[in-house]
Amino acid sequence: MSERLYHVDGDLVPAAEATVSVRDRGFMYGDAAFETLRAYGGTPFRWTAHAQRLERTCETLGFAGALPPTADLRERVGETLAANDLTDAYVRLSVTRGVQPGKLTPDEAVDPTVVVLVSELPRGGVDGERVWDDPARLRTVDTERIPDAAVPAAAKTHNYLNGILARLELRGTDADEALLRASDGSLTEGATSNLFFRHEGRLRTPTASLPLLPGVTREVVLECAADLGVSVETGRYDPGVLADAAEVFVTNSTWELRPVTAVDEWTFPVGPVTRRLQAAFDERTERLY
Amino acid sequence: MSERLYHVDGDLVPAAEATVSVRDRGFMYGDAAFETLRAYGGTPFRWTAHAQRLERTCETLGFAGALPPTADLRERVGETLAANDLTDAYVRLSVTRGVQPGKLTPDEAVDPTVVVLVSELPRGGVDGERVWDDPARLRTVDTERIPDAAVPAAAKTHNYLNGILARLELRGTDADEALLRASDGSLTEGATSNLFFRHEGRLRTPTASLPLLPGVTREVVLECAADLGVSVETGRYDPGVLADAAEVFVTNSTWELRPVTAVDEWTFPVGPVTRRLQAAFDERTERLY
Image 1: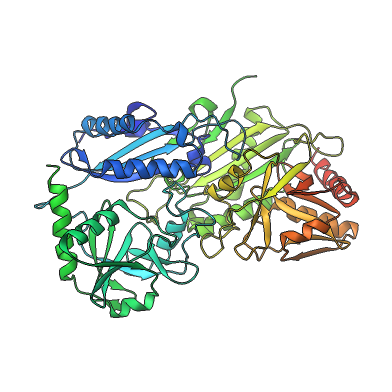
Image 2: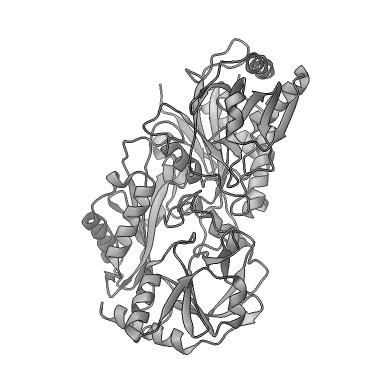
């Protein structure tokens, strides 16, 4: 395989030379917005939803005015995929506040740094292959989700230590995703995924009014559920309710719907609603081929 | 002035070429520890305290084992100062978890990226010049300090959006430092500074059991106060107590002790205890010349 090319600040550059200034605020402070998405058959899935969330994140960070137009960003993603001859890929698109004079206080004048990273993924869709080998095993961790009053969870930024500290708690266990609670103890989300579970005959997922990042895949799953006539309840749930869950799965753009076979001491089968929703999801991505 | 040289990953490089990989976790996730310190007469002030805190931060992040020895880090700082012909300087020393395979979950094997940035400051010490032109004007902001249960505040990391969001709230005001409260409403610290105030005849500062970063300068001020026989109380304080404060100041490594003449609608003189502590602090830095 020839060396991967990344898109940095308007140029396609070999991965080994893809860098940002040590004075870029994205590096110094994690002062940057990003999106991770998947391309299926060369087309980014739910591009508009990702672009809109990127813009909302930049609004939260106060530099939405400096965000390049969506069409421009879309072009950079397309160029990066094409340059790497990739049609099925993971894409990470970051926009930082760039280099600025002074220290912590952001300057109004922003020259953003735009970075696109890609890596190869297997084909998705109806006859596709999953990116994960096995269902997920979750563990509730002591690290709590950052409250919205401190940093809004709906903003997807380069400040990812909350999730990293949560994942570090999994060392020495057989779990591969951390389940974080809000400060009131209610279930929020995984370090990089949203949580769904079937309980008392209904599909449930923590409400977006809790500190969590409502994923694009979570939205697609809600659409699929509506199409299939599966009723979904969003709410605040104590982790203990999982003891009685019939099935559990997590979602994110890379994993799509990933069944969960364990949360702490509780185990779950890969359930029928999970499978139906996976199939409905796959039909949607299949349309991009 | 010739171009500044920075120390990146073992080499001194011109500032314009001082970069890190876009895949460095310091960039992707703010997965990095750092210290800001001052050199007086060529010597980093309180090097040991900074080096110890850097190590504690790396312990929190789970990669203390990969931190280069203190003497090595000290040498990089010294080389950077010498290469730039600087004796009085601001120094920012960062250690990231480096580039790793995989995504969010940190790998045990860490090849850290070490970055030293410097910039010129005026001479400090007894006959020195302050780096700030005027006393600080503070404003209590709505952004709350991240609770320790989410990300320990004592860890000084590249995840600085909490402070940035706080500073953004100052836009359109005449304040230049944001005062953050804990989720219980009590005073914690400024976005980049610790808070002290004289109230009911005692010098007070929020307790380090609150979510705040206990600064090295805060420690030096506590030492100076002990030397001068100024009694200091650490505790939990409601912002309202500032209405009756006789004097207020903030501290950090760059500002040293900076008087505060306003917090919201309340105004304060530059008080006698602030001046005595400034003088005692200046005597300590003067010893480095």
